[in-house]
Length: 262
Image 1: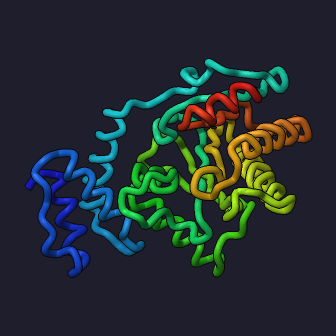
Image 2: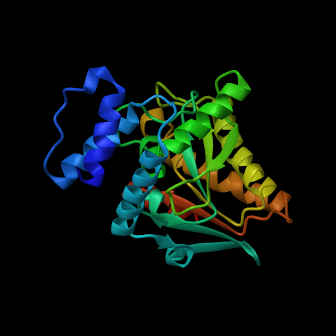
Image 3: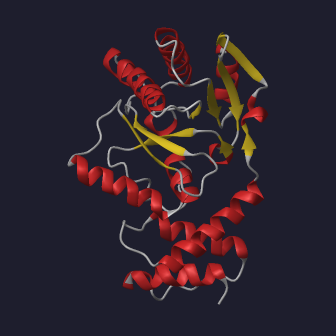
């Protein structure tokens, strides 16, 4: 059996509900099923053989996507001070080779359980491998309660090209009109992430557009809060270890907003 076939069958055998599922014959079909099965999988022990083969598969997929170096993200840049730089880069955050990328998590902090969902939480956990959900699970067990909005936690990155992932829970805006308290919650996300990066002596970090999209925070206002909060933090902490802050965007609308702000 090929590598993907073995990995899929292992996950199918874990759950009687999926035991009769057929494995696709084409490569993309296999990769989609492999990702979907990991998306819905609750943290639990797994064999060393599975981890080894999973890591091989995810590293191969990363090489196919291509790793993006920090120097490739300098098209739009602004210096806050002589050694502090704000950058804008559009693309897949799971390709970035920086010290840390930011994950817009939910309060469970376990990643997205919806198969093949397009959110960044799903993308990051899928590219990192099942070890990331396990580490988050252990962190939440130790904490004993769900993660509060506006805080940040750091984990390893596993099969991602970055060194770490910093997870934060942004405010949810059901009606799309944030209150002053929710604006402060979003600013707290950025302050907490910068503080976490500084505590761990990280030099480069890539932010996603926290709370926009499904959380419905208005894109323009979210970007304004993001840029201003980061600038304020760097100004107030001149000895901060972070030297490059990348605002990673996926949609054209966000790219245009951040380019104007930067």
